[in-house]
Image 1 (cartoon, one colour):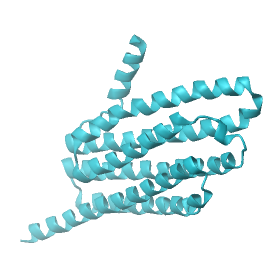
Image 2: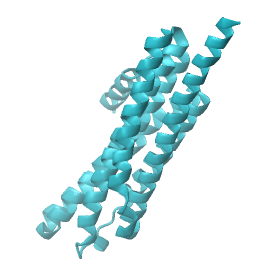
Image 3: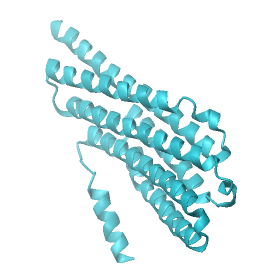
Image 4: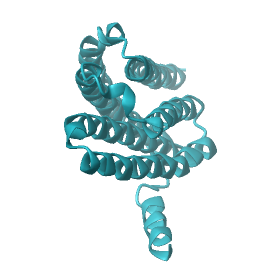
Amino acid sequence: MPDKHLSRRFDAELALVSTRLLEMGGLAESQIACVLDALKSFDLGLLEHVGDDEHRLNLMEIAIDDEVVNAIARWQPTASDLRLLMAASKCAANLERVGDEARKIAKRTRRVAMDAGAWNLNIAEIKASGDMASHMLGGALDAFARMDATAATQIVRDDETIDAEFRAFVVKVVKSMKEDPRTVQLGLDYLSIAKSIERIGDHATNIAESVVYAVRGTDIRHEHRKQRGQENAAN
């Protein structure tokens, strides 16, 4: 009976860590949705709480890490339970960085909105990659909630699409800046936004990789990057 009681307490702590992480993920998703909507509409009112939300994400990461450390010290878990706790800590770190990138996008969007030429530059690639990054983040969190390694693996593969959109946008913006020097500052702001979106996709990928590790005990962090490098070299 005592063993069952202790087991239930440990299971409750694991569930709490997962719940806190998904709450943090929900806040990060909301933050990304706000900054992307603001970028599309130049409605700066949508950016009002971005700074506060980023601070909340920082505090949530610290709280999750504390819970993970305490759980490991108290229960000394092995195998899958230990992998889950380690994955949760890594996921929390990536979500905190998603908040950092959202803040950067908000800062650049405020500057872009003040530029009279902002409406004249086609940012289709940024919009598309932003939607993909948001979808990937939501999918990675859903994969964590269900501990679905198959879904997580697909998200890892999807990261290349965002990278391709970023590269295409860089080429287009650099060409625009060369043709019209007046667009240089605007182009640099948009390039910064595009880079932040690409990084959000990277963080979603990292979360998905952590899910695969938690479920299968397989570290695929460098595996798909090596494969991608081989494919690029072949092309």
